[in-house]
Image 1: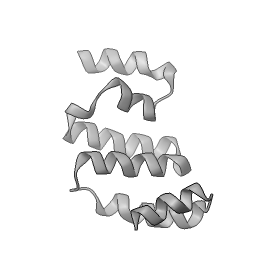
Image 2: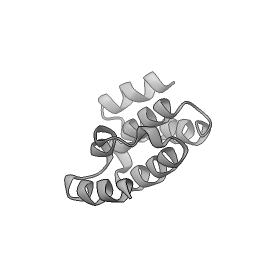
Image 3: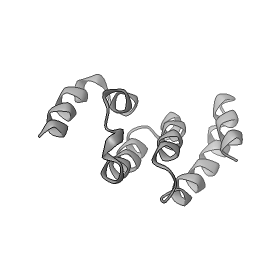
Image 4: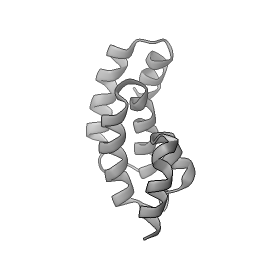
Length: 90
């Protein structure tokens, strides 16, 4: 189903992809952190900021080893990266 959602997203069927991804994000709370990150990345194409904050904050709390510059760059605009980097180093 996730492959279908990715394909729907690529074809700009945002509504259909969004319904599948909403279900997947809600059902994946106990899934592997990398998979949750992938779902958030797919969902990010549709929702933007709200999904970024909800999914990524929970993900980084559960799996702090994923807090890398590359991961943060996927979800946060460059203007926020310096602030986040300082916060994570404290």
